[in-house]
Amino acid sequence: MSQAPSSTLRFAEKRELILDGAAALFNRRGIKAGTLAEVAASVGLATNSLTYYYRKKEDLVVACLLRSIAALDGVIAEADARVPPGDLAGRVRAVVQGYVALLAAIEDRLRPALIFFGDMRALPQPQAEPAFSAYVAMFRRLRGLLHTGQAGAGVPQPPHASAARQALNARTHGLLSQLLWARAWLGRYETSDYPRVAGAMVDILLHGLAAPGQRWPAEALPAPLPLPADGEPDVDNATREAYLRTATRLVNDHGVGGASVERIAATLELTKGSFYHHHETKNGLIDDCFERSFALVRGVQRAALNDAGSRQANGWQTLLAAVLPLMALQTSPQGPLLRLTAWTELPGGLRWQKYGTLNRLAERYAAMVVAGLADGSLRLVDPAVAAQLICGLVNALAEVEHWLPGDGPPDLQPLLARPLLRGLLAAPDA
Figure (cartoon, rainbow, N blue to C red):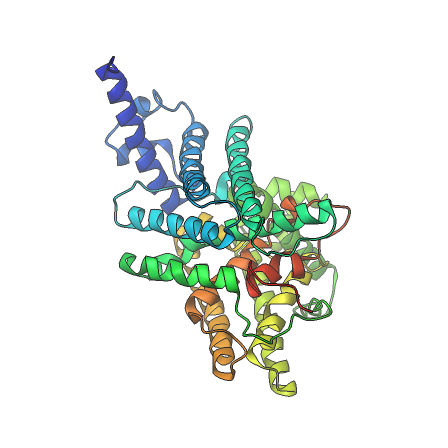
């Protein structure tokens, strides 16, 4: 059997070393801020030597993304091969446990770092095409795993083929979003606790949060009223709000790096001068986009807690009131909410400031779960893990419409929220 030439092996080894260093740097600094010179320095190369392997930074970014996508795709493929069709619970368990084990190995430095997917949206063509094609192929593999898992698993199916495909896409997107969101919060645990946390995730994903006898609302919960503006409504406030909504949508679609001042102004058919009248810097605008979404989430949480006290709602009803209106808000004129994982694309100080706010909002969800455990309306679950899965559901809102195309906005309360809050194995309410 012929052996590969030593020069070929050295080339491959050096390339892997570059990918390791690049993923770690881009995760720390962001794709836009990280440079080829910094990657080269991190692995002991001159910049011109690194360009022998990757001519442009975008080529290196794509290689990092393809390696991350392949790693997750490998976890899904292994679950598909190991767990037979019809065993939805076993398939979901294998994917979640396999991915969490991969993250533990990375944290313990047994596997190289994998780049975050966030700024993939900022890639220009032609580099974007192979990355997005690989991501879509991975999504389809996960969708196929869930589809064959549902067969014979007693999962209710919509009566029409198009509705069934939309429901399956929503479940796939919801599960994939939870896996990717896990990278944002698993670091709070010791890696020796990762298997226990994975078990808590699987339990909630399969069986939901509601205790037996708790019902899903017969009617969709509405989006909250518009937030009050600072001062009297005027043209400046309206323009500022339009900037925030447009910038939020562009960050969701193109990443922080792709949401340029020029693109935001052009989308609104306004000048760059108008932009700088309302925001001194682009980072200031992104900061305001985060704060706007945080304010919307806080407002829904606060309304749910206030309403719970006035009508003596139990924990399950309070939690629904704190989550379901966000589904309606996403497709309302107030929407969209910002993709929470965009915090990984921010510069250092701002990044950790937003991460701190995310954790405080999660703690409020955790307190609601504890209240539901106390009154018996929720199943016995890990409140901290449940709170993070609820945040993962909120994060999934940012991209869900890309996976649920249709003539009008999708009804996200039954399509996306119900599979998590009631569980992937839940039977329909009578």
